[in-house]
Each structure stands twice: as structure tokens, then as C-alpha cells.
Length: 423
Image 1 (spheres, rainbow, N blue to C red):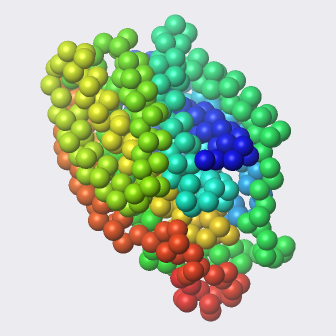
Image 2 (image 1 turned 60 degrees about the vertical axis):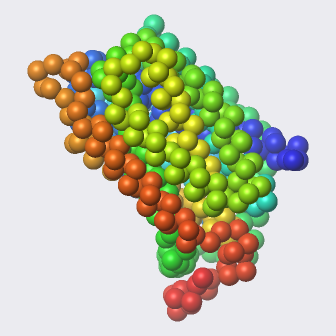
Image 3 (image 1 turned 90 degrees about the vertical axis):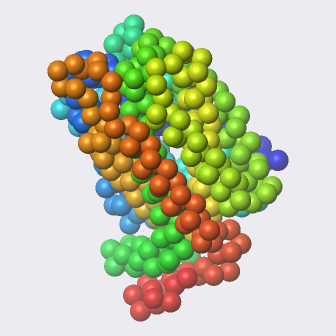
């Protein structure tokens, strides 16, 4: 059971995740609207999605040098404000280049924000409850799907695609004020650090984080899941409309029903991870996700009920993999270096997702003469996603986390000479 303080913390972090996840996932179901509004191809749409992720990757790498030098609350408020300003730019975008630029700004702050949220979970929640805590925060993705995406699509259908971004900024502003008032300072990770800042010290800190086979295994696990996932995610809505025969007005049902199920299953998977072992549950969920991946990417025209069954099956197992995975990754590093590590993790995660979107943009094609013709190549993207799922399963067998690394970590020296001996 979580303490009242932990519940309040997780509640706020879940709301931060909700707005930042909604800002990203709303792009996919709005894909048909963007394509009509700006007259863009599937490849150009993939750039619209990946611009956020590639920007987040670059900013995540830069933030890794500084993030652990600040209190978690201060960093969260600064990053969240920058994210909201970028999202406001999306709402005001008059054309495609302006929208791309706004997505870059939103991604520069939002990508680092994601890593910081999980750093706070790792700092504040004991490892024995971290699986359920991770599932609780990740349930924000489900809430965004259940509530945010369907409402966003409906709002966009009445007031054009700009409107959902205005709503996100409004809700996010209230969340920012609540975080400023309620969150503790969370500066425990700064104890023992030198007050004086130098780039050499920060390079040594990052070198310490990178100088570990175990941490690279953690990076590889998340990169594999993200690359394989974003081979598919940006094109699901378009594929459902143009290949399966779902009406654009029915798209909210896909996210509503799928998100409703994953809201409960994410927390359930988190509890199972704490009870039976995170590695074991990850293996089961990841291998089980192969069937819905192949099913969804090869769907023929179907009645709505069967299409919804396939998409819901996909969302439950596909998103469920990330609950034990993120819990293990968060626990694979000591608290003092967790912010920099998670920022680097977010950098590689976003880069992998952006690269996956771009690769899919070249694989998934469509007739130039008929913008409403069926997509081709989505099945190939599905097989590549399966391959990266299997790579993730292999990597997780070698990942050490929690008590397995607690005794092996130590505070690194500020000199480079000690770095080769870091755990």
C-alpha cells in the first residue's frame, strides 16, 4: 500500500504524464486531418511525428549533463512550462513548417520531462513497490487514450485540429500550479555532490553512467521496444481508415475501448511484476504481444466489432510490456545518477522512436494519384516490430536491477582515472 504522501506524488506525476502523453498521442488519430489540412504524404506525416521525438532525443542528451544538479521539483516545473509553451505554439500554428517547429520545441522539453518523471518515481518509491508505482504513472497513457484522445478527436471535428492543443495547454496550466504548490523539493539526490559546477565533473558523471554494460543493456531494452513500437503506432489510425474500412468518426472508439482496458491492465501487470518478478512478467507479456502485432498489421476489411477487438488486444499487450521494462530500467542505476541516466535513456528512447517512425514512413506507401487508397507495406513493418520484440526479450535476460546493483554502485571520483572501475 502507498502512503498518503506517495499517493499524492503519484497522482501529480500521473497528471503530468497524462498531458505530455496526450500531446504526443493525439498526433496519430489526427493524422487524416493533418494530411487534408496540409496536403502531405505518409512520409511527410512521419516527419511531423518524428520531429518531436528527434528533438527530445537531442535535448535528453544535453540534459543528462545537468539534470542531477537541480532539485527534482525545480527541474520538473521548468521543463513542464517549456513543454506547455511548445504545445501552445502547436495550437497557433498557421502552416506545416510552423507546426513542425512547434513540435520541435514541445519535444525538446517534453522528452526530458518523461525521463524526469520516472527518476522521481525511482527516488521516492521503494523498489518493492516500484512496479505498481510505475504501472500507476504509466496508466496515464491509458487515461489519455480513454478520455483525452476521443475527446480530442471530437473537439477537432467540431473546431478543427488546433482545438485539442488549446485544451492541453489549459489543463496543463492547472497541473503546473498544483505541482508548484504540492510537490516537495526532492533534493536528496544532491547530498554529497560538490557545490561547484564544472563541465569536466559533469563529463565524468556521464562517463560513469555510460561505463557499464548493465546500463547499456537497459538502454538497448528500451530502444528495441520503442523502435519496434513506432514502426506501427503513427500509422494505426490511417491504416484502420484506409485499409480496414473504419470510419474516421469511429476512430475515438479504438482509443476509448483500448485505453479503458489498459488503464486496468497496466496496474494489474505492475502488481504481478512486484509479486512474481519483473523479468518473468516482461517475458510473458512481450512474447504474448507478438500475436496482436501480426494480427493488427495484416487486418483485411472487417466489421467494426472485430477491428476493435484486434486493436484492443494489441493495446493491452503492447503497452503492458513497458510497465515491467521501465521498472527494471529505473532500478538499474543508483539514485545519485538516476536523473542523468534516465535523461540519457529518454534521449535514446526518443531517438529510437523517431527513427522507427521515419523508417516506417519509407516502408508504408500509398498511391500518389489516390490519397485515399489502401496503405502498402504495413505488414512488413509488423514483422520488423516482432523482430525487435524478440531482441528485447533476449536483452532483458542479462539486465541486473534493484538489489542486484545496490551493492555494486558507488560514488564515482571526479577524476577520469576511476571511471574504468565503475560498476
